[in-house]
View 1 (cartoon, rainbow, N blue to C red):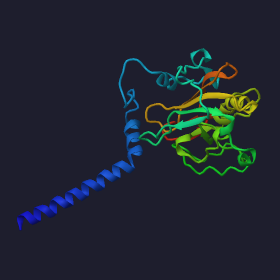
View 2 (cartoon, helix red, strand yellow):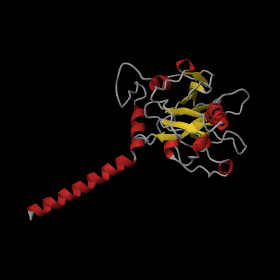
View 3 (spheres, rainbow, N blue to C red):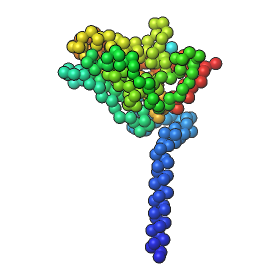
View 4 (cartoon, rainbow, N blue to C red):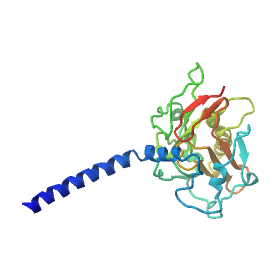
Length: 262
């Protein structure tokens, strides 16, 4: 009888433990962020590794926006290796798995005209439904397009036709994604440069890499690191960092909340 009671107690304990583990797992983002917010008076360390020397992504995440949306990286020179620039009979794209917070990571591609969706498909593409980490529907004006955030593609839809894919979408401001102000640069500036080159010939290839730059456990990236190199020539060649900011708005990158600057 005692063994039977002990067995029942052990099963109950296991069930409770399993339930608690499930609760913690499905709420891990909120729990971690609350822990971080409680410790904001102290520096937040990188949870993946602790080293005295910061890598390039960590250095980019520490940059402060000072009015210039786009800044060159490595004197605007791409850092692709010889292997990265190997030609291929056809283009390709490769998306990284989401990290433990559900955030997209680096996206790589060898772009070619053959990968691009036909014009009629581009016009009729489906509405984005993926809820990217930190996304909130925040209006900045009265027009239909006046939204603070877009769901920004890492590898643009015009290059491969990939649309509702969580590994390829981040929460980006309108200013990051497609800044319509005169002489302003944004992701679409560099995407257009690549697309125009690809459309010239099916023999044109561009090695392409886009990395969302997150700081610690923040859900909204601080910016995007874009790098491209045309194969066999320097017709397309850039290495830039674009800040994920919006003039007149203060963004909480930890959770995506935002407020207007007074």
